[in-house]
Length: 89
Ligand SMILES: [Zn+2]
Image (cartoon, rainbow, N blue to C red; front, side, top):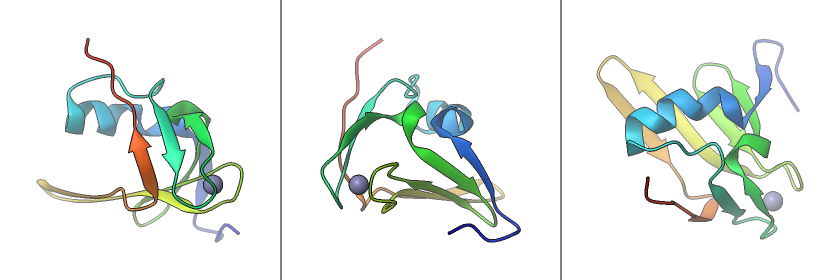
């Protein structure tokens, strides 16, 4: 599953970038997988850091979130996430 250049972490690894993007803490935010429908807190997803950041469902391994950063730009692909539940601070 993982390439040798990839490092597998948990969802806490993207807490900083998600805080930067959304302005709120999201590690406890429930996310629903578009592949299998599983609902998990972001901190419980599998995070792979390589050339970009890939976040996979821990149940079906589908890609739920992709994040690519280059300079001042950040590309966020949430097409594998049916819903992301945000709570106002
Ligand atoms: Zn899934």
